[in-house]
Image (cartoon, rainbow, N blue to C red; front, top):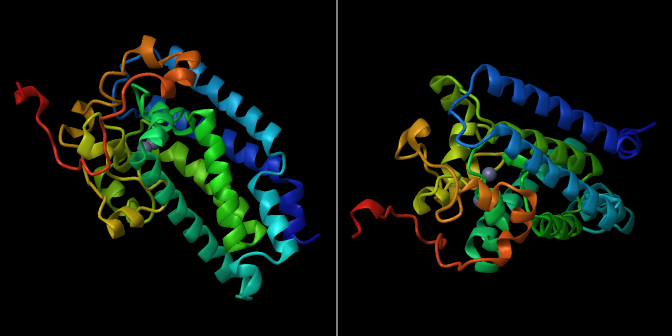
Length: 288
Ligand SMILES: [Zn+2]
Ligand SMILES: [Zn+2]
């Protein structure tokens, strides 16, 4: 059996075991060495965040049973995309595909912040009043569907090897749980790690209520895009313990904690804050 057949036949098992394995490790790490004290009941957040995760998995399976991997298989059968057209050494095609797909996720993330209607969807991710391993999978179903459609388009154009798509999906899943986790990492270790991967301290800046900080550190996997495109911010102004997580005006558990509130959040309220170019700090305390 070649590797393509093996990974496509065992895709769900591979992804689930990585998901639960990583989830367990990060959840345990958060208990043993937490970075910040949580502000909201963990039971409320976890049950509702995880309920959203299950709802999203169900919707995705229903709408796109073959998912991104199926699209990659289809593209290769049709000879679609760059890497199906130009034959590169397998390893080179895999590595380039993973890096390019990660760059696309970065651009997509910038886009959902930049376009007001999409920011409405993406707000659900940011409205989590705390930041831990479950935040990493907390996305509105419509954003999940949008992500999948963008991924299909990228795969059709890129024609990545099937294995690259699986590596990318598993990697993105694992790093999203890692970089959203509420874990304490030695400052020096963090410094070295964030040369290669987005660390929790790096991504936490992006979950700040402050506009200039929320409009920074869009990377999910590789930290290079933010440095390359000028959206990198090393640390939050208020420090990791002092910074406020979430979005202004929608940060009370009764507003954003329950599943049904998350589902309707995109459709309520005005969207005139967090505009993309607001990368400077407004001192709200001294405004009046
Ligand atoms: Zn974001
Ligand atoms: Zn995030």
